[in-house]
Length: 204
Image (cartoon, rainbow, N blue to C red; front, side, top):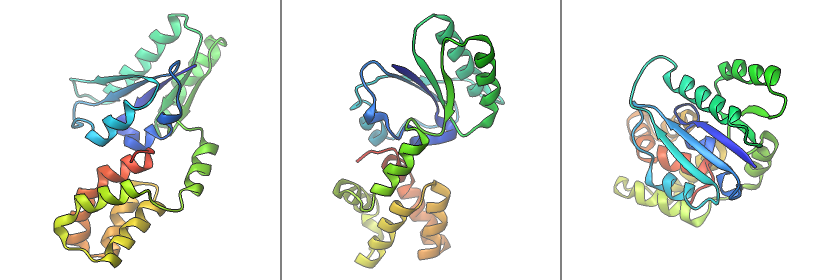
């Protein structure tokens, strides 16, 4: 039984990797900053197919570290409510270590850890190693998104390869620019980036 607090501005859809493995006793709280647009529909569909309880917190204010402080405050409220469960902050931001150290020193009853995705690090590596081919639904989504770009089979093969091999959106972008050119690669990246994050989160 665990609660996952997602710093969505920091990890995007990649932080949701493993959400389909959660049980009905788990909960996921997703913090979305004021500058972030609504979640992609594919992400929403993946989330709500999970057994876990899902809460989306859309923040209405913008300030330095505003989302971080909201997440940390929410965590403190959950811990002090006395519920017996583990807590995981999903973010690449190492500044959360200060929050984790506080609870380690002051409340040995609970486990508080930071991860970059819902899946533990070891399982992430295993999952990526097993993903040696794209699912048909992912290929279909790619083709739908770039159908007006008049790409050949060889071009699609290069895009599929990037979806499989790259772990971050910036690497997808640089890969597309290298395969095509700056203008076309950048345009394809804008069309495909949300689908890439859904794929890395275990969707499609």
